[in-house]
Amino acid sequence: MCVKLLNSFLFSLFSKSVTATVAIVERATKPDSHFIFTYGTLKCGFPNNRLMENLISGGDVVFIGDFTAVETFPLCCGPYGIPYLINITGSGHRIRGELYKVNNSGLGPLDDLEGIEIGHYERLPVTVVGDGGEMVAAEACFAHRSFGEGMWKRCGEVGIEEFSMELGKKYERKEERPSDHDFFQDIRNFISNGD
Image (cartoon, rainbow, N blue to C red; front, side, top):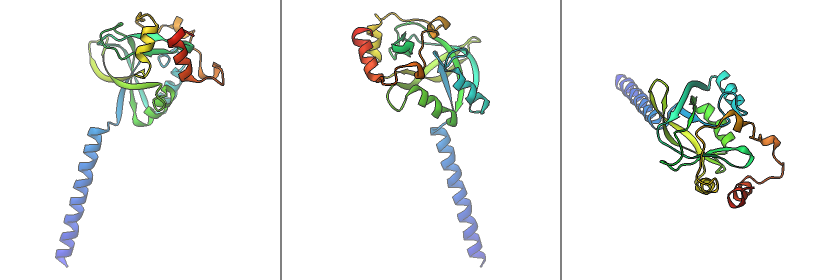
């Protein structure tokens, strides 16, 4: 009887140890939160910031502060006044924006807005620095690689340092765009002839 209890106890300890080890490995490979650097319409006072406000009030996002990219990247506006960070390190400017800490629950709505699944943007690593000199390894939404470089060339390889309030006024929300528009065709038209 005691041997069965001992074996049961040892199996229980082993199972808990394996479960704890799996949880530690999952946390190491799948962080519970992400630092997301925003540079466009998600910033405070801009058209899509209401999503951030909703996620903050729900406890899924924490505003960290104003930050600047350590490296230079192109930033330009495409169709409908949408800002795009282009993944060409060493071109453009050190982009200014905002840093947020986002948990896994908050990441889904942000990825939906940015069209990550459909190839509109892609989330890539970027190192940013705060006003106090603190450096943070973060992620930002870059124009998808399928059109980013073409957009940069179409904009004459002249970018902006910051998506300003003035540029924000030119942004057209999804509900303001033609209902029958094809986003990727709009991108192709913009790249080929500036429409």
